[in-house]
Image (cartoon, rainbow, N blue to C red; front, side):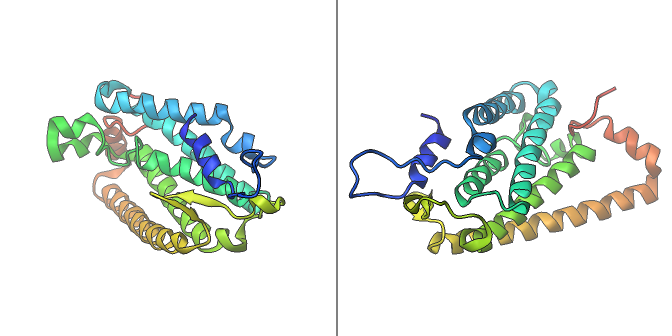
Length: 237
């Protein structure tokens, strides 16, 4: 059983009076958002990125592209489902966990999880930057902001609640099974709010840095430099 399947089991409400087994709390959109094929693709992207980050420096750029595409797809599904009021609390929670899995495992904005820093120390940052890096920065900031909204509003009435009575209380796991609208929501609200502020400040700083680079060296010199970095979302020449 993979981790998301286990999570689905933990999300189901206890039913002490029933001996028929766990209740099926999947929704009509569950297969599209985090079906087995989707989860398998995500897990293989994590695994391949791990090998690229630690063993194959020539593949780092491609793995960053793959992670960015998967993360963008997850983010679009979250925003679209929320905007159209089709997303259920359980769906939002699982997709948010999958998106967070990228951030805390293989995805790297400035390449800190790659072997460049093991080989070059602080100078490893010179291998990163450009369009791909800043695009990932925007994605991470957007996920953090959505996470803050989810834990402050989505767990209350911002997302759809399951029709089945036994599925209306959704749980998450953090060293213990917690109801998402209980005390754990306060912890995650504070955490995601701080994360949103941090990455938003990083993005604004990056924009100012790009503006300064343009004003001092011009577009052509900056573009030439960006061709030398392992940023993703480009083709090396």
